[in-house]
Image 1 (cartoon, rainbow, N blue to C red):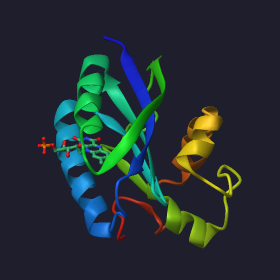
Image 2: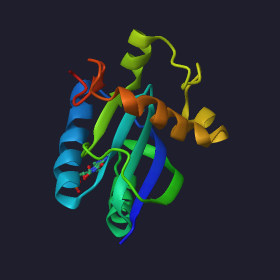
Image 3: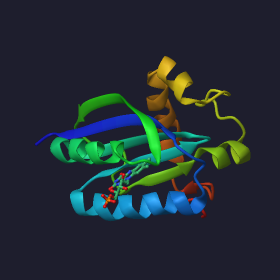
Image 4: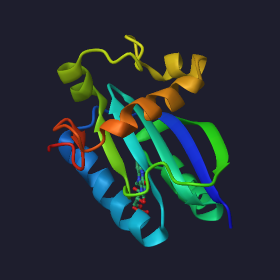
Length: 150
Ligand SMILES: Cc1cc2nc3c(=O)[nH]c(=O)nc-3n(C[C@H](O)[C@H](O)[C@H](O)COP(=O)(O)O)c2cc1C
């Protein structure tokens, strides 16, 4: 069975605290580890961008489930594709807190100054660019890594 990758963006229905984000990540990591799902979640202001990788059926079933989560709305899938290798092999769900990333690192060239769901949708390739930009930094700094409070 080929591997499958899906990216979406969504809008948080309220401001997420570190505890809120940890709740999401704990559930995600438990489930994803059991189901062979890997990926990455970013949170910027009120925008989530997530990449899910795994067997197609598993990813699509999880996506159906995540879509119904009332912590976000306007869930928009920006990309689906078959892949031969995972981009986030070692991550049941990597996490980047974009607000901190911006605070500490300045506005990254991969990010529009007015980063928003609308802005990303207007440039659908931006979510991909964002992921590609952030991925090499995973785990390399205190603002990017395993937990939002790290
Ligand atoms: C932005 C966002 C991303 C999420 N990502 C995942 C994920 O990757 N894996 C997962 O199992 N749950 C994820 N969840 C949580 C699920 O929506 C759901 O709350 C969780 O699977 C528990 O479901 P249950 O309450 O039906 O048991 C995410 C939720 C949000 C808001």
